[in-house]
Amino acid sequence: MTTTEAPLSVDKPRSPARPAARRSNFELYSWIFMRLSGVVLLFLVLGHLLIMLFLDGGVHRINFAFVAGRWASPFWQFWDLTMLWLAGLHGGNGLRTVINDYSRSDRTRFWLKMLLYCSIVLTVVLGTYVLFTFDPNIS
Amino acid sequence: MASTTATAAEGRPREEAPRAKGTLYRGDLGMWSWVAHRITGVLTFFFLFVHVLDTALVRVSPNAYDTVINTYKHPLMIVFELGLLAAVLFHAFNGIRVMLVDFWSRGPRLQRPMLWTVLVLWLVLIIPAAISMIARAATELFGG
Image 1 (tube, helix red, strand yellow):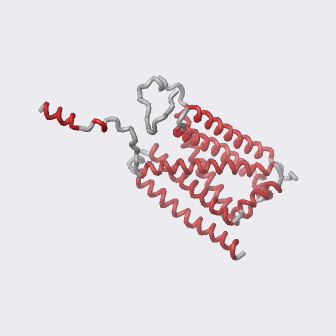
Image 2 (cartoon, rainbow over the protein chains, first blue to last red):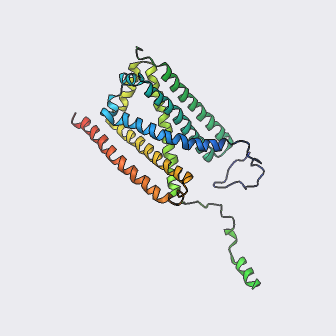
Image 3 (cartoon, one colour):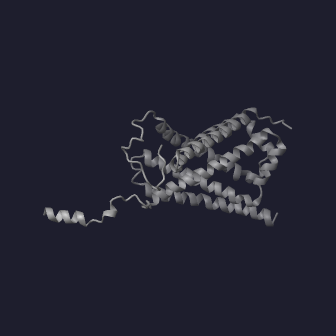
């Protein structure tokens, strides 16, 4: 399909390579999602950074026992789970936009997005698994 | 009169018509805030990837987790912690600005003062954070 060889060239608006009509509202919903998740992440992430980097000695007090103590409370479990999912999807969608913007050919665009989707699924699924099966008495 | 118009049209250099070749939009402050928003977002995404993997080690063994977390406690790691904090804070405040531009009727007109507000707020938070982190690292390195 369209391979952008010359830098900074833009398809003519009426060129036939462009889809004739919009088929779904996916981009609209992802645009709204970025804003809604952004507001929630603002509080979750800044709170997380404040607790982990500054309060009570910051990163120096973090160890397995500290994590076990936090995840004993459903509040922090829910906090971390929400943060994991929203950050994964918000960041993933942001990187999808960046890849769409800067890939020069459809093939690189496709493979970069496949790599991105695999890494999002890996982190979100692995993180969820760890949160739900965490065992404070593991040896 | 018609002849004057014709000469004016002919007098315009032909090469100027297709402007696309080699012309770079140099933008304004708004473009640079957009660039910075992208860069800070991508950096934060890569940290998130690593961070989920290191936290997942709590499912392997306490020892494995503590060993990896100890690398974060090296005094020199504050460079990365400060970098992450700087990226996240800018992305967060500029994100609010983006939302205000999108959803607030006066947002587009005030985008520039809002960017200065973002930068001032960013400095107000990042300077004390940097001082407290560097002080902690310094006592550890030299006066522990």
